[in-house]
Length: 292
Image (cartoon, rainbow, N blue to C red):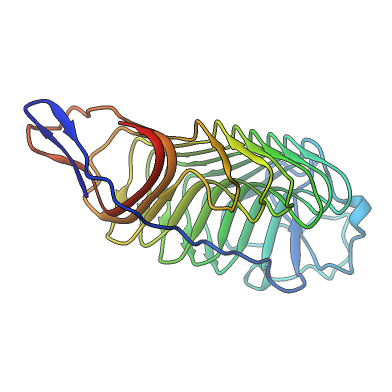
């Protein structure tokens, strides 16, 4: 499927397809948690070193500059090496809401890691952010806000990427809820730079079957893409999907495997576009009431 400019008219051929991004949390710790008092570094702790009640749930900040450990004097001498960390959380809660937490990544290598602006098991995740300007990501997952188990809604969470290298099988989602009835709304993935391999990029993901999935956005204004990436408005079983949007403002040279579950796809012509150029090529599109 190609979306081309010919005689200044957008042409699209739509075919069936399906996106599968099944993600599961990795095994037990070690974990890194954000802390509102630690806005310029990061804190190392294993699961049994810090009780869950000490994790920040509102307004936490976690900034990663690379692979050098930041030592927090409030922790004992049992800090752990960066290379052993499996999960990074800015905001974290087992039973409550996580709200307006931010993780910022400027450098470092993340091989099979899980990165969350906010994570909760039984609450809701709202307004959490992941901001990435550098680093190397190999596999693993990146979520703006995530709700696990029997939790509530994931709304208005954001992943913003302006740089970095994202290798094969990296999953990126603005918001996620694995609750059967959780809603996902207003979640965003914005990409203005970076190099992307066969990544999976969706506005929201999860396994809910009855919740609403609406007003979520993927916007791409920069970056380079190789063949095999996927784009999706959602990755879940929800039958209520409303106004999920793809905004594309660059020519993408790589070919997408699938573009799925957007109700709106908007193409803004970049300055370097020429008649007959391809903005987006994909093997298949799954859609309902798509506006191009």
